[in-house]
Image (cartoon, rainbow, N blue to C red):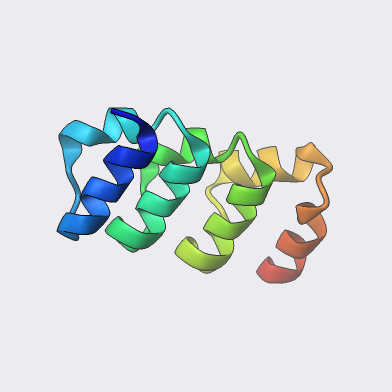
Length: 93
């Protein structure tokens, strides 16, 4: 099963499926989507994966947490020097 299939299964059922989470955790995009669309909130288990991509980190802060990221994600995003850093800084001010 792929991360996409695992995410789609959980989305279809409208609930967390813990046995599928290790599969979802293999992909930053689907980890973000799982937190946003299925859990509808912070998913600490997925944060290390999401933090590897500045785009998803920014959108995780904006759309899921609705504010400042946890310290390790916050620091990783700021150090990334990605174009989303400016948007993130505006978001948390």
